[in-house]
Image 1 (cartoon, rainbow, N blue to C red):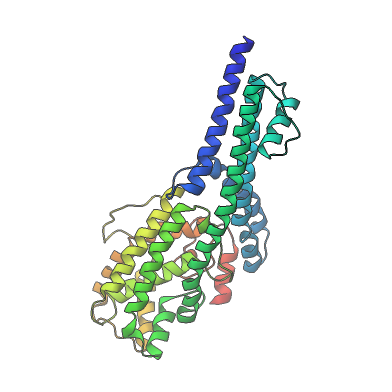
Image 2: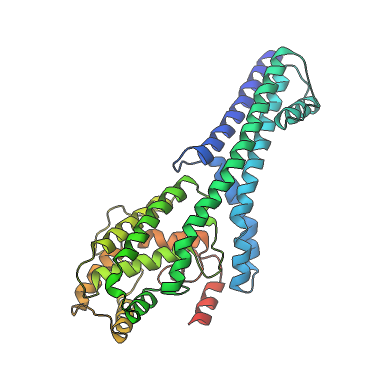
Length: 363
């Protein structure tokens, strides 16, 4: 019976170690979004105390400051969890090889994992297990060392264009502010390069944010900015350009729209956010016709040329918006994006009562 128990203990320990290694490899090495249960547990459990702290905040700036620490903290907790799981997984393996539980097995596992070398057993199978565990420990540390610079490099690349949008569309960014500034400087007919820049941005963000699932939660340095609200404002601006502005057709704006809604859909998938991959142009969207008309009225007042048929313009705009509406709003709630019209202000699963207060102050 003891022999059978030791075999089962060895198998159970090896299963825990292999599952932990699989989690680390999927999270850091595999260049695609894959479901990682252990990582999900870490982020969910770490998120809960941050949500409680946010609910006690009295200003948006305080809430944003709290949430700005969530993703880095969870990212640093994750390798600690990997190391702890490997340490605990090797304990039954050492017991199966003849060491006593829990003290001797714990000391042997910790000494080997952290390459401390203070606990040494000279039996052949135990020494082999020690070498394996030490290699795993060094490998996890190496993954972390290479992982963090990659994350921050991708974050910095993402934020360059988000910061640039502040110059062109304000904070929070809006289509009205973008087209007003473009009209004033005579740039409105030269926006094609702008759409091309954002098409490339959407492509890069899709690749990085689906490969590293912690990246969407990294917040912009400015509390009023967000990669997601910037994406929403650019998509709405491109949709208005394609549907309502009376200028020659811009294929650049339409390609930007397609790149944007595909990117947001792919980013939303790992978080289980549902969406229709082929929505009908007549499906409902969260933007009302009155909201759309008010924006067009503002654009007309500043001299932006508009198409005379507003009914058709609304149908065309809604036909574009329906492609990203169902993922933009839940993502805004998930990452607790700052207030921004037509995205985080829709109130879907929003965690902080401060959004409406911030909207009143901004309005």
